[in-house]
Image (cartoon, rainbow, N blue to C red; front, side, top):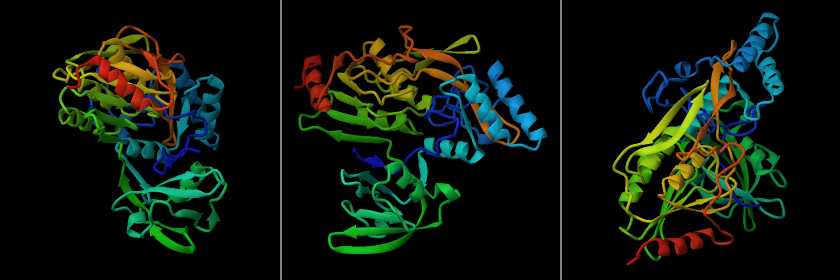
Length: 393
């Protein structure tokens, strides 16, 4: 089983399917904040959670809100009533979030999470091994190293558990454990076994990683579009070897802040259309800022885990002729959700529209087909494609 970063999205909402892409007021592919052109605030403007959620006029939202209000008047749970209404709506991406979950999503897209700073994977024999330790994290301060075995969390054995369950134990999801709360880990290294109590901390994510291949090609991998990603990508492009080319790796990227996806597009485009989207019958557009690097050859890597805002970016670079897309068909999440606040403070969101690429292609349910397939070493394949796009000398 492949490794999984122990920074993970917050607890999945009971009525939700996966992380979603939210436009108009709150931008989420896993609950982010920020605004799109045409919303009441300016593009990219940050607001507090109390002010970002607005009721949508869509009939489905009204039905869900009414069900929640009726439940509250009857002394029942508004959130549970809303979940039932969302389930009946048939909306694949409909979801209901508790106030805590929604706040947690917003913090995650701000590039923060609560944890101990471990990455791990489940091995074939069911054991959970540490694959990476974040510098300066509670795990690093406790002397935990890559290769250590994680035997237990707060007395509960981890062997045989899905990594998602181990994540939940480390985060203290069952108790909504905040930063500063203790968590006791059972560890093993060679013949040594020991326990160590750590305190959870607020940590920042590494959404962008940059590396240079032997031939001078720059590989920029984006795991999620958290706050600041666009600036980091532009800096990486500016610092890349001129003319050697860039590989933009969006494999496994489930989305994030749409404003950051547009900002990333601006690193490679000299202005122009990035996507259009419709909300309640009205169509609006997203545009890149001028001044991006349009000279260096560019290959974008995608796969079935490329979703949402990552698909929006891929479609823009492909349609504008800026990048050759290599890999496998993307997930196909191109719908627009709008959130509404329920009487108990929870948040319901339902689909109200869809976005399209600059050429007018719909993404939802279809995904984006790459220009070239890639099997095995996709990065090597992308490097070969770059050689054909420009003179690497």
